[in-house]
Length: 315
Length: 188
Image 1 (tube, rainbow over the protein chains, first blue to last red):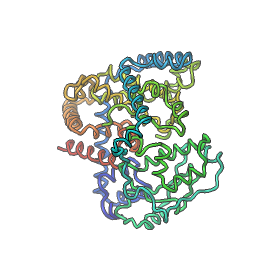
Image 2 (image 1 turned 60 degrees about the vertical axis):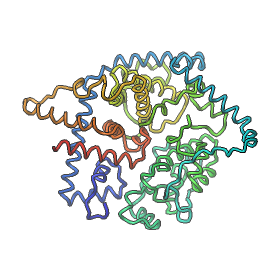
Image 3 (image 1 turned 180 degrees about the vertical axis):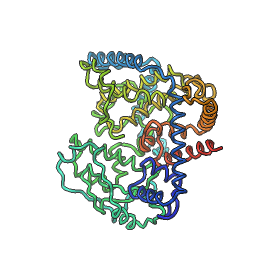
Image 4 (image 1 turned 90 degrees about the horizontal axis):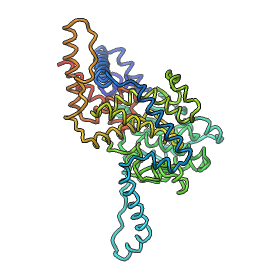
């Protein structure tokens, strides 16, 4: 929607219906719909086709689902079995839980680990002998606008105790930026009105890490950056929150790292060059190698099979 | 829907007998009561058999057990469940060499509920309309189908983006495009 008087696109109507627009944009669309019968008719068509799709979705896929009772009993029995074995002997239980089809993956992982060990041990000397340029992992590109201007948004935090920071889980620390402040931030960044819907006003230092609703801590983050987007930053915030609350990282260090270079902080705390979802790494490593192994599920580090969360092609 | 941890579970009584078992086990069973049906519907949309889809669901909740037992993140467990189901269903389909065109699960014929419309003309019209929508749905690119189905199961855009590894903008564009096609088919 380019301004208050022009018609919203179908995409904006759907975002508004799904509650996915920012408060400011949602208000603008609601106001427009009050005045424009044409757009209300379009919205009504959209809602009708959603109703039709949900009906078809349920009829075609949920019409004759088997009763839950058998499935529940089966799961309950398998959980009891796994739990009993894990209490008796966690390692043995894991191996018994593993399906035979994973044995090849386990073997491959062993070979891969041995190769890596060998490469790390003697790789540098071989490289110097042959003078072959080392292969460098390609880092995920950093798109324009995903990092704030440090002059406009250096970050700002209040004095908080560890208790304050750790009292609430991430999901409960949601702060909506008022419209006036939003306009001000967009203005400072020189974002023209017709493009403002593509941005979300984000906190550089997240509220859950003590960040404040100060213009120096807010910047317009692109809504649909394919790599370094708001979702990735959310993951970093949660990671830092967990590390701070478990005493592994000092709160001031976390605030400093995320405000100086949040993408650099992500790479540092996830030990990766790209967001985990886009990476081929098997799991999120911990800060130290010992706890890294402990934090992985036994299924992960014993077998080398893929994490069920990440296994299989994405699309 | 807010945090998954705050959902009330009406079927909790069904798992009351589990009170002497581990806390995590009971928690997994509660999630099972709440999400088994939507996850099963989603797994079936990969055109695998009901039996295979049930197996996928078992694997999903066993994975949840291991996830919780390892004390991993509890953030957005609903999205996590659908992501695991998505990957497991894809793996199952690949393993079984089941192709879209030769599915053992036919959307239109196998699991249709009888239409309650009393009037034969209305029933015929509704059937034709459903068939048109199903035809368009089947012709959509797979990622677009996944987006629609995940949204129909109540997932927010961020959760869908997380399940499918897409950006928020891509989810929004996909849903708009798909609904536009369904709308045009419905009007024709």
